Image 1 (tube, rainbow, N blue to C red):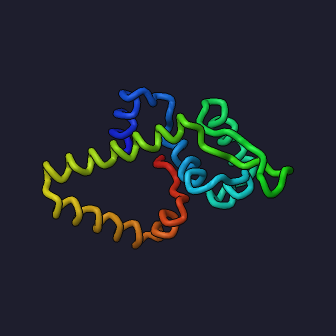
Image 2: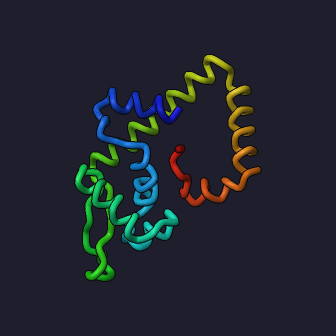
Length: 138
């Protein structure tokens, strides 16, 4: 489904987005963060977070602004382009959900979702999902 969302996003003019972008965007979406806080939430080094942030800044998805409580700290904010991409992604995921429910029935789709959630939980992935630290597929 992720590949299908990516394909549809490209068709809507968001071809510059990558799967890994969502890993960072989901954390900044909740509230502006420092790079240190982002690294902690993602469970990566500050250097890895800085590299990801620099790439997202270069592509116009993130911007930095001074923290109003501590001028020495810069907070990461989503750009309008990133907010538009989040809205498009949410719409596309809802569309896919509707398509699957139409094709397979809402009950079967819900049963599949519940089974997948149980499998993820069985292998310890529930905490990573709740903390938004899901690693991209290999």
